[in-house]
Image (cartoon, rainbow over all chains, first blue to last red; front, side):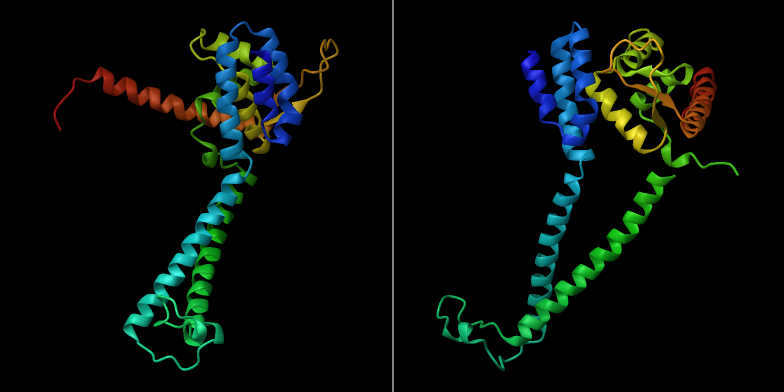
Amino acid sequence: MRRCYRCLLWLHPPGFRREFAGEMLWIYDQSPAHASLVADGAGSLARQWLLRSGWWKIALAMALAVFQILLGGLGMELFRRRNPVAPVRTFEAAAAYSGPLAHRPITIEIVMYLAVFVAGGLAAMVILLTFWMRRFTARRVR
Amino acid sequence: MTEDYSPFLPLSPAALHILLSLAGADRHGYGIMQEVARQSDGQYKLGPGTLYDNLQKLMTQGLVEASPAPPAHDDPRRRYFRLTGFGRGVLAAEIGRLEGVVREAKVHLRAPRRAT
């Protein structure tokens, strides 16, 4: 059981482990209720990685990036349906392509629309995160 | 200038009990756990994971800080913690808030129920 608890402590983020793991193990040695301490250690492990270590920010950034790309693609598609444009210049690779999407070659206009929508989504995300981050840091500094 | 404690309120039960246990004396982690169990008559027990997770958060927020070990310090693995002045203010604000809740609850529980 002690080995299991040590493993749980070892799996914590390095900063937390360096600062508190020694004391936590010492408390484990003092305490008679080992099973509940292992459960508590597992809960702490989840909280540390999901909430405190900042990994959730990376997961959120990735989710927002996927959302931004989807938004850009959707916006471009809607724009194309409303404003059908005959392809003016196609890329050579698209012209040579003969698969199921060959009837919709990638034009420079499409690339430009995509870039505009992606840039718009990025700008909106930066503005939102800036406001949110300002509130977040103000709360922590006070 | 009065400080604004409202962003920290309400405190979680764990944070409240930890601050309360440090209000009387500087303590190490195990001492905090024992004091919390004593204050709550054994009804609220903190595990070390919950304790140090909350201590880390409270230290980041500036409510608790590490304190120098007392002279009769028996084990070098033990670290002592103490309440900062700001932490004491937050604790007082939370106790004031809870007093208001208790006052309100007493009024409502004493009065006969009526349909709204």
